[in-house]
Image (tube, rainbow, N blue to C red):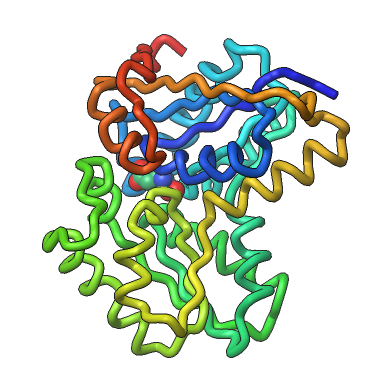
Length: 271
Ligand code: DGL
């Protein structure tokens, strides 16, 4: 048993898809969430910049006494996970492996779509993992760079003509490719779950990279006997690197809870 907290980070709001799933699956765990809202989006950045940002994010989180870290960001998971694991002496998991395992499990026609940031699509990490799991799969990848800024600006509701138009533009070509499974490989995208599933239709199973990481985390904590005491209610502390109010507003909508004054702003450049 281990009651220390788990660190979770992303460039912004996206990691909340992982945090929400962790809180449901492991309600006794304390979380420390960091969203790097001053530097979002990460998805168009170079590998060098991403390595630097990811190292700073982890250094900030490690100012707390943690037992594990979830890289709740597809972009960091595809480009910097190995470096983070090498440089840190605590378990660190990403979102690529768990999402690929689920997709490989659920696809029937072996045609899997992947939507993610430019950095993630370019890295080829999802595709390589899927091929190792099921060599016969065809992976159709597409970067959707406008999704993250729209999510960060709170454009996440059904009926919002801007996000619906952008979603159709990105997703209809994938739908025409007869995929039966779609990996939402950027953790921001599940905030658009309804909008994406409306475009893709009922024949396509959506896989949330953020959510799948919660199952991987549970497995890790169980196997290393790191689970928190069962009968307690865990707490989450939220930190961001830009105005807390902006984060709180969309986070309230997504988490369906009052997030006013729930987040604190920190200076990530100090780490
Ligand atoms: N949510 C992150 C991801 O999963 C980062 C998106 C971004 O900042 O561009 O890729």
